Every structure is written in structure tokens, then in C-alpha cells.
Image 1: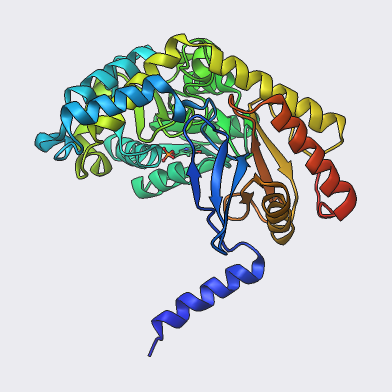
Image 2: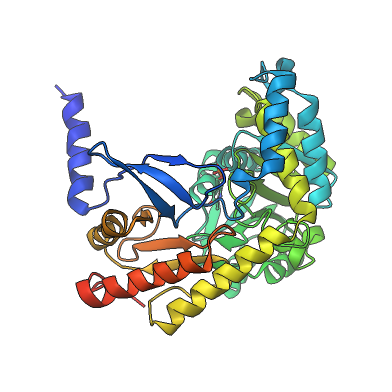
Length: 407
Ligand SMILES: *Cc1c(COP(=O)(O)O)cnc(C)c1O
């Protein structure tokens, strides 16, 4: 007879043994003081730390305009939406926000989901079923939510090497030209810090008549003159069939969305389980997201500050010979190359230097490529960055903690 609890205990023991057991860090974010937050340690003590791994890239989580919109929405409309989108849960705010997103991406329509994860899962699995099982071409480093969506769609799929256009073309060529196809990829890859060759991928999509599906989760709000993402920045919005994003990162909230043609969005709206059978986002989140999206359509200040901080951080890492991945995005992965070592470095940062960085281990990244994923947000100061660089140099020189480094 199976001892159920023993199975779970054995699993946890093996994670701990490999050094990749996940310890959450309970924080109290402090509105107005980001990237500082109060960290509650396991021994019951608490202290102020500087967060270096947040996705709140622009500090919109403490933006006053967004906060005011959310408070007002609760007072005016109450708390929950009261139902699924179909059964009493569609607020006028859903309609306003979807219109705002369609405008952001210069598309006919948009659809909001509970999260970016649910958007990818729901949209990709639906598109695959609606198109009667097309062949899917998926970048090797695509996010778990896209992989999940493609899997639950249940179709033939080819994985092309990360950002490798030639490999992608080779695979596209190998498939019957008459079969429907989807190319699924991201713009900013958040674990590598690089940006995909979107235009070249779109050229291939034209040549082989494939539908393009791009995840711009790490880019919306942050890239492009109105925060539309890398596709907006590069003038490629009209080359993309489905653009997926989140309110959870640069917009500082939560919730996901897709934008596209009216017919495509209407079909996904009518078909996707993950969209249909769940309570819709509450008024406060919708009002906050709308305020944040609209705010970042015009405000350049936050993006400018975050670009400058990212550039300065990279310059300093370069100058001090610290092994970061040289990507063209705002995200800076610092390589460690071993799970236990990665854990030890981040523990030391937290315990001795009041710096919070979460170690990134398998399965988020392949074994042997464990890393710290650093984000210098719009809210970090030059002092914060200088301090971080000083500490990393000290750890590097004095503790030999980066012995497993892979450059
Ligand atoms: C975070 C993330 C998602 C999921 O978005 P959420 O809104 O957090 O659910 C999707 N794709 C990528 C690439 C991500 O990094």
C-alpha cells in the first residue's frame, strides 16, 4: 500500500538535497519606498531590504495615479466582479480596458484573462483547436505557460533552438506548405535577458504562411513610445497576429491579455475554458490596470529611468568582470552555475547585506546554468546600484562563492 505522505516527503527531501528547495521570502512592500521592503525572516525578526529581483520594473506598484484609481473603484463599485464574464461579471471597466489595450497594440480587439499564464494557456490551446491542429513552432526557451498551452492544444510541434532563425526555417520547410502553422515566441526572454529577432521571424511567417503569436509579458509598459512592447518599438505591430501581455510586470498589478483581429479574439472569447469558466477580475484591478496602461502611454519618465539604470548596472558589471549574460534587454542575469552555490550567495546577500535576490534554479533554467536575475528598476538609485556592485565584488573576491561560474 502506498504511504502517500512518504511520497511527498521523499520528493521534498530530494529537492533539498539538490539545493533547489524553494524558500519564499515573506515581504511587506512599503508604498513610496520601493525597492525597499520589510523582510520577515524565519526566526521571527524583520528588517528593511532592497529588492533586486522584482518585475515591478517601473515602480508602478506604488504609482499614485494607479492607487487612487483602485481606491476609487472599490468605493464606487465594491470588491468582486460578482461572476464570470458571461454571467454578470463583465464590468464596463472590462470593456474600457480591452479598448485601451486594442488601441495600445493598434489591433481590432483585446481579451483580458486572470493572468498572463492563463492568457497563454487559454489562447494557445484554443487557437490550436480552432485551427484544427496546426503545426506549432515553439522557441526552446518559451515560458512554461506557452508550453502548457501548446501541450493542452495537443498537436504536432517542433521546438527550434532559442532565437535561431535558420533552425526555425529548416523546420518550417520540412512541413507540408498547405498545413496551418503557428510560430510561438517571446520578445524579451526574462531568464536570458535577450530579445528575439522579431522581424526575421515575421518574414518567415509570411513566407510559410504561419500565424505569429508573441509573448511580450516582459516588454509591455516598458518598450515602445507608448509602452506597447518591443513590437511597437520596432514598428512591427501589424506583422503580429496575436500579442500577449500581462499587467503583472511593468504595469505593477496582475492579470493577462491578448490583442488581435476581431474574429480571432471573438473566437478565443467563445471557446477558451480558462477564459470562460472563472470569475472575472475585480473592478479595483481593472481600474488600476486601465490607469497604469493609460499612464504609461504618455509618461516617459519611468521608462527612461529604468533604461538608464539597466545600462549603468551592466556597465558596472562589465567594468568589474562579473559574469553577466550580455543581452539587449533591461534584465541582467548574473551566472552562478550551481544550485547550492546560487542559494549560498543569495542567502549571504540577504543575511549580511540586506539585499534580496531570489536564486533561479532548475526547472526555471537548465541545471548547471543557475543564476541570479537582477532587475534595476526605475525606483533604484545610483547608490543602490553602486552598493550592489560593491557587495558582489566583495563576495566574488573574498568568498570564492562564484567558483562554479560559467561566463
Ligand atoms: C511571468 C510570465 C508569464 C505569466 O504572466 P503572469 O501574468 O505572471 O501570469 C508569461 N510569460 C512569460 C514569459 C513570463 O515571464
